Image (cartoon, rainbow, N blue to C red; front, side, top):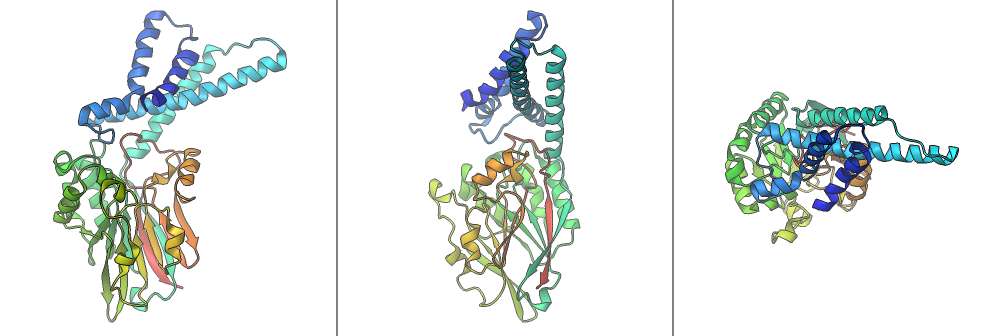
Length: 370
């Protein structure tokens, strides 16, 4: 992995930095700084024992993400400049040098895009309103409001002040029910206890339900399930809850993450999650990963809420993320009678905190009958 992340940096050093008409005493420290930034994930592992939890002060985590993103963008821009110079050279049949001005412009643009990307990633998201039509929705649930948080990744990058701001905004949305579709944290309970404490303040008339994401399994899953439950969240690990209005019901079911068996825990089991649920009641399923949504739709689920993909984060990269999730990456999908909604995420993994055109969100759903 260290070599993979070093490759864009080497492209930048060899093809961008060295050809610039700068003195050697500037190029050498610049090259060293670029190499240091490219190994962000190595330093993260040294800081905490896990590549998923960089235990640095927040400004340093932000700086690392900016530098890491700038290197990636600049490597892409330099490859484009090289290809352009090569095409021009072939057309003219002579070498065509790339002027310093073009390299400097590429560097400036890369730095600017990385700064915008990090700023987009670390903001407290706005409320995004989505209306979902459900066939057979009982009249008593017409207009029912459900709020989704997903992929909070509470960490040094998303600390106490950020999580408190998210809770404040979520509560102000006046939803009937709040759900969290996994990836609460990056770090152990001991590391994140203070940062995640504001989640105890989440409240809605019908409760706060949640499922684990894959990151909970990286940091003592059982410990986190106990702690999240102690914070007042009802964890739906292959089980369900029933919301009742008058004599009608809405089922909120949840399954564990697809990665669970690889960590020695029970994998997602929709049969177990639905066992004993009221027959004929519409079902809202919480499943961190959207990968198996097509088979879920065949089970008569009305609405599946997922996350995990972060919306793909950057145009182009989103296509790769979609391929790893059976085509599901961001927003609404209609699968037969089921609606799948894949949240872009409320937060983001601090190891790659960049967003361009894939904004973070707190999603408020209004349920309507067909």
